[in-house]
Image 1 (tube, rainbow, N blue to C red):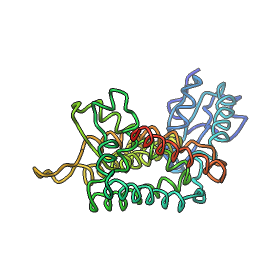
Image 2 (tube, one colour):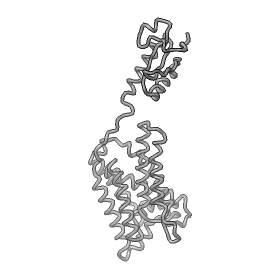
Image 3 (spheres, rainbow, N blue to C red):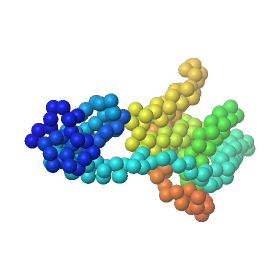
Length: 314
């Protein structure tokens, strides 16, 4: 049996129509997008249909023999997708944000004083900086210690300001302890990847690798959120574009001959932050508000950093 060429002759909305030779209306709406979604449902289950654009709306008609099954499948589709995409709910900020930011500032400030003042400061600076060849020869701790070293007050203040800004956004989402741990790991992994890509003689210092690691975490987390919400692909790419713009604006240096910005370290920090952000944002919500879990994560971050410095100085 074929669908009539003019389905508008059907007795729409009547079960009795399924027992006659007329086509049966199974869907009607004002939205073309909604009609296309129902067409996909009918195609998936192998039911033939015709489209009709009428003053009362955009309709779909099927053969009488298929009407009951089509109505059942469409009703199931609407029931399962009634609350999709899910409404976004703004969670309260995770705990430990202030403590994490204070810890970030104290570590950078204290390390700067310790490596610029006193007779042992020069040795500590040399022992802690990221030396590509040494890192690849097994001195992995330099990937951590280099994050706490700065060449002068402007360098330090820049990383305190921008690092604090981006770190705050990460910490609000996942908490002080987990946020600081994630940023530290992103920075260390970024330094290791940078060492792989640079010449063995390459030297670098500064928290900026971790700062761009925080940017990468924000981008990765937002990309995953949009992916899970089934946002259109173009809109999923928007966080990545924003990350690239931040890198271009803040991470490429001045381009002057005396500019010592380690651009590649910024890139590797951002790249390493992407998967960590996508992973961290998937932490169970209860952990974001669990003081013990946040303290444990923060303690692990401090232990990694302290242990790295012990290895660097012995």
